[in-house]
Length: 96
Image (cartoon, rainbow, N blue to C red; front, top):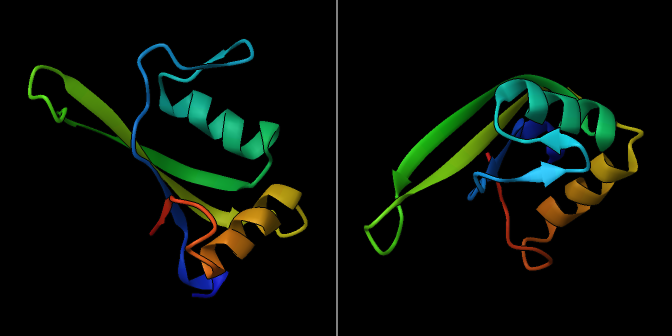
């Protein structure tokens, strides 16, 4: 799969109390800031959050779909994810 064929990443679980440094990851702006400036990986066009019942059925799990309009091709993070996407056995993550 070439990197030009996917423009989104799936984050299966977004904990309610997720913090990256001082950044509280509980909204679209925080995800955009993280993927654009802290990693940096690419230009985020939008983030879709989805809530679904957890496996036990007694709570809710939030997932995120991070959609990109462009990649920062020279970014080491982008290059690492691109290599991993071409070798799915390296890591367990979903690209869309």
